[in-house]
Image 1 (cartoon, helix red, strand yellow):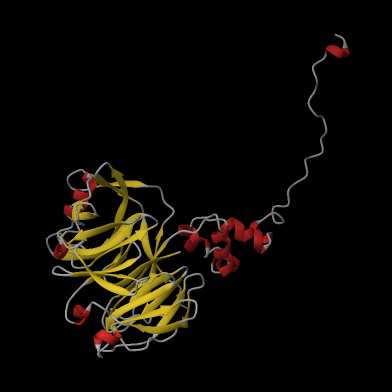
Image 2 (image 1 turned 135 degrees about the vertical axis):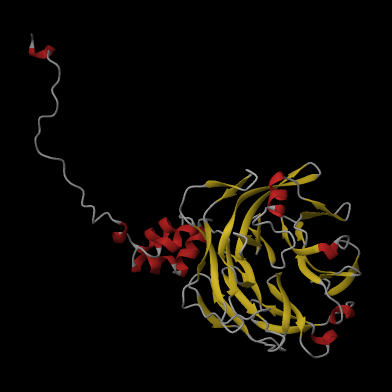
Length: 392
């Protein structure tokens, strides 16, 4: 056979290919700017585990530069911060909600219904975080910072403390003009509006406003709302107005007009509301009996959120949220996050209590709103969750 007809032989070069120097190509050898860009694309739910890898990982993950990078490449994620108190004589402790890196499972209840389940838990914020928060203090998220405002009935306070969620460090904020307790506080137009008891003339000092840019406070007269000092109102922000809603009378405050006015909306069925929040300009609430409702501005009525999972969550034998005294709902990145503390008997001997949490996706279908439970599970042992807020 002609040599030209022979099949080509493989490379007979016996020299081995050059070996990669893995150490030189490891993550630890990357410049901080590149490492930041990589870590900024990783979900924050993995940060607790990654921070344990090395001191450099811990330093990078807590660096303000990382959060600037996340903001620049638009990978910021909402994060729930919760303040828990185990006992009246013990200081409060801070936690964040993280998902453990495990596969999704489905948990069956006693009636063979399925509840979506991810392994979420409340992880403690690093010990450098000063756990000074007392019951009835209020949290307000301003970007990646949390403002902690107010005191207790026994100890009213004008102090303001600010937690930097990027570094988990505290600093003093500008003190309020008067000491307060049981306050409501909201961010609107780059200002924090604080409403709460002060022990002095309520019509003159019931409201004060903090300008975030100048870090200065000023009083805001409660014009047209003189009943605040004697009544009980559920207060929240909706469509860039502050609403104070009660069963008999409700008010709305427009910061641009600087005046309160009596409104007739939102009140029907209000006495049954446990807590409420706003998602995409729609009000959502949970009632004392565990129903999730949304507010229809056309009919001026609260309407049930539909979905078989919603009823299961309400009446579940071991974790149902109907008639639970401790319940909070928050807007977590456009989805409804609900926290509650059920109690149930185990082995007919004792009552087990834990904090439960669920995330619900909401969808408008015609004239109805449907809810789909994305996950639901217990996240921590029982204690009082004094405050919770969503930050970035």
